[in-house]
Length: 269
Image (cartoon, rainbow, N blue to C red; front, side, top):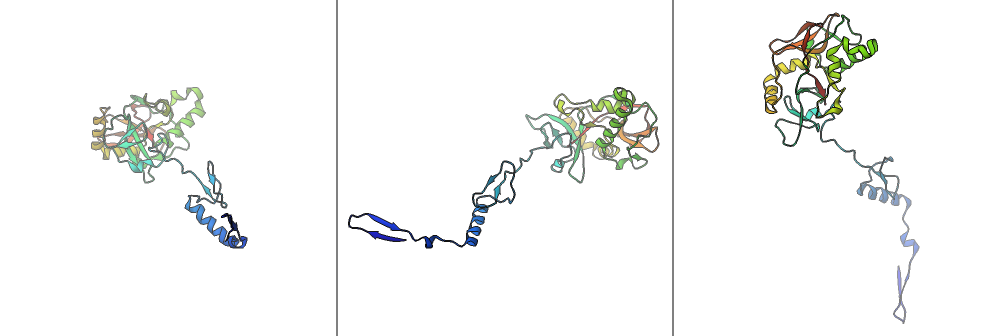
């Protein structure tokens, strides 16, 4: 740049274009660095993203992270919880009673994948597993290894789908326990209807191993206790007439499907 002073005290500037010329490669490097510094770190376009004015870089908004689980589906959130924690309607869990939050269940199972199941705060009474002697297709059979089945909701969906296909509107007459659970939802979360399940044998067995802590949590929120009566599981025994049942004093065992046993749902989270 050249400065020329005239007699009238006016200042004139002569710009030399050559002094402002940058090599193309150097400009690209500068632009890339500037984009990254400003937070434009994506090389591909994205929804609601902003493109950097210096090259093909985008600033993409981070997806919102849920504060809690989505009740009724496996989200992996249970890795933040412990067995016997209280699960709240907002999807969070805590060992303590949290003022201002509404309990919806007590955690009774957490898988290695971070997916969990919580026990409903009350039962649906005594119901019949099935009124027919059928080995349900696609429902895994268990013998002495009932405690290895944790697929509560997969089992429940399999029976619901089978009975619905076979009997249509009359399906609930053949599989009362499953349809009562399918139509269940606590008043605090009516949107969870269709998402509750009959616990599998392994989930019920897990209650035996953690009965003291689970009972204490139910007592803290003044909800229906575990009790000692027989419960139905959603696990089917080898053959067509028997399904898995559970009693706190004897853990999981085999029982004839025609009997009425206590049913208490679980929900995935």
